[in-house]
Length: 92
Image (tube, rainbow, N blue to C red; front, side, top):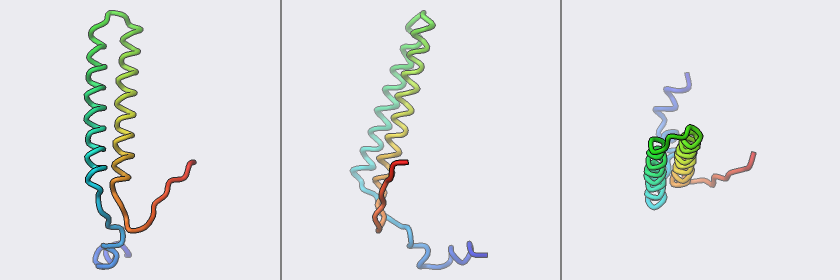
């Protein structure tokens, strides 16, 4: 079995270790905080209207803001982790 040997090999353990860029980690955290706050404020508007149409729009807006916020936080967070070799992104 290869897995136990991989875990015990000192060279294999350091193969993909990297560092974190503290500024980007902080930015990622701030994006998550802003998206959470904005989503909760938008969702609060759901209870302030009696119109079913507006309730649906506010729910859609809150969910969209939260989804984009989570995606953005993870995207920035992935860039915060720096490996010892170049990593590139290719469009589909």
